[in-house]
Amino acid sequence: MCKCFDLRTIFYIFATINIIFKLLSLERGIKLNNKPPKAYKDLDFLNSPDARTVRILSEFYEPQARFRDNKIADTIVFFGSSRIVSRAEALKKMANISKNKYSNHDSPNKKIREAQKSLELSKYYEDAVELSKRLTNWSMNLKTDQKRFIICSGGGPGIMEAANKGAKLAGGDSIGLNISIPTEQYINKYVKRNLAFEFHYFFMRKFWFIYLAKALIAFPGGFGTMDELMEVLTLIQTKKVRKKICILVYDKKYWNEIINFDALLSNGMISANDKKLIEFCNDVDEAFNKITEHFKKYYL
Image (cartoon, rainbow, N blue to C red):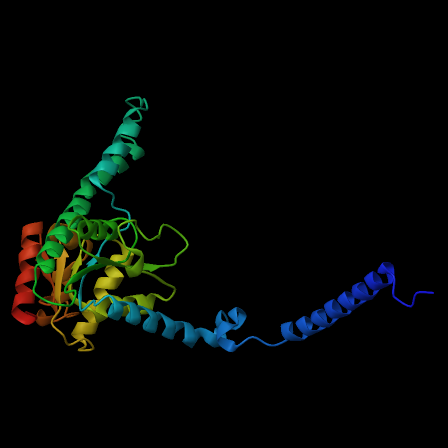
């Protein structure tokens, strides 16, 4: 009788060994999976209230690292409404409305008035594009190893988009400091990925607006624009910011309708020196000259 194992017996032996190895591997895997994650890889913790300070610091250190890597020395900040569209977009809206028939009773109706106002305001979009383009061309011709006076916006649509668009048309870089909000805000297509930022905290976004800024121009806007403008003015008024920042308010007529600066002065709410913190300008040439002269006086 042959004492050798037959093929069937050998098969069963190897199958049994294989099952044993699988069971041992599974047991080891379970033990490894029970190992707690490192704190800095624990998303539940990082998104919790306890890690809020970690998230805040991340919105300081991560932008700082990218600005350093991209050799960004300082910026020109554009504020303004996200609702203002380009002239081409405004004309498109008008054309779409004109295709519809309205009775004399309905005209001028709300949609027509809104489209007309959109077309009227579109000049600010075009002015922001042109100003950004001219400033970018000017700064790119400076003899420096760093990137000086780079256009910076909130990264979204409207005047923000116009600012980034102008810089791109000039062949330069620009920054987009976007903020996560429920509606309307997204990174516009004119911001390169390496200089596009997404903030959760408004105050950290505002920090980066002011920290690198050497000039700030406020185009017509609403609550957000006024909030940003007034916060910068307050920081300068209270000497929390001491560097020389050129603050321009674009279109004196618009802003005097929105904010009565003279009434603030006459009622003693601000001083004459406080009012001098801002300068009005009414066209691209005036804005360009005031900003570049400010830089030549204090930073070049």
